Image (cartoon, rainbow, N blue to C red; front, side, top):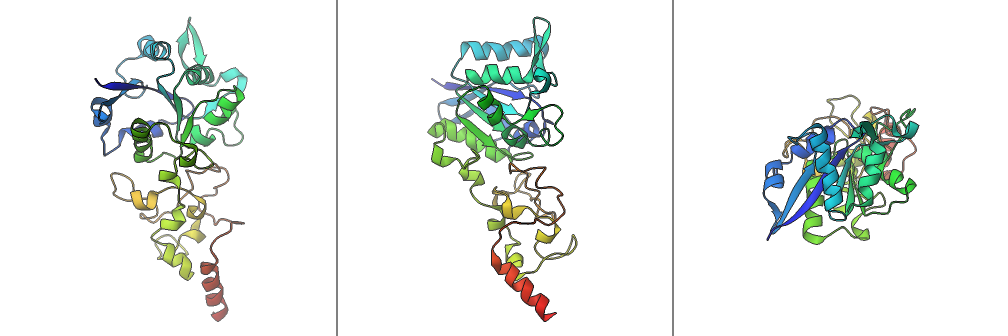
Length: 298
């Protein structure tokens, strides 16, 4: 007997980038995830996903609503995007009911109430992200903030990133299947899995030695730490330096560009401007020491 884990993947105020990154998972591939047993005796049954499902219109919405009704308390709800709340949710809808649009916020509320757990996929869902940036006319909020406003208490996991690495999502789902829902100590203060978000980019960056030596790049293409060119690695938690992207091909700093802090709650408002140096941030003093020494000698 194979146990099925039903999943409803709901897209709200987002760009579909998080959905696309999930489809680019390399090991297991998306085909393996959807067809094979992700763990012995357990199969993920993706009941609703607007990007990849064959059904459309009323047929697709019916599949989602039937899952929520027939498998109450058994399905995992994945929310991809922030939740627009202004004007009673008028800025986004998912399908219709009785000939009238059903607001995204209504769908999230209805589906979250009866879910086994909720996964916020991407920084927009985790922290508000770009849709919630000022002036935020649509009243977008994070999934966590929205659920709290509705007094819905469900296990919530934030898979932050713009977009997240596919391994972060697949690894989290695999962990749930094999070990159950993560415990409090498995998540950081922002409900991100410590397995993937436990260390700063700065800690594992291959350019860290340049920072400690006080050797900073002055323009793109220079050798040296990219801190002076706006790198947000010193405040950003993710394992990009050791995981890499595009099936392990490269990552942003490996390509010569600074980290923009996309896994952080402050993204994008407080991590911008992306190409300007961080200010008022406590950093290891070794680099500052060497930078001052070189300046005095000059």
